[in-house]
Length: 86
Image (tube, rainbow, N blue to C red):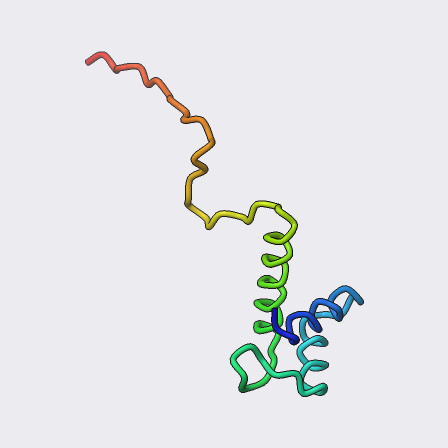
């Protein structure tokens, strides 16, 4: 995990907003994950999401599936629709 993501996690745990975290990381000259540019609220949010995902993976908790994907363990639901008489 990048040093920036870890630092962002520390600042978030202190109750800082995404904008405050971005400002602090830029002031501390913490490099962005891409190695260039500046930290923004969006880049901080993405770093925190990745950090949370890595922590979930290490703790054994299942990661969330992308929206629209099926759970193979979920039972199928069968709905019977009566035929309409014409």
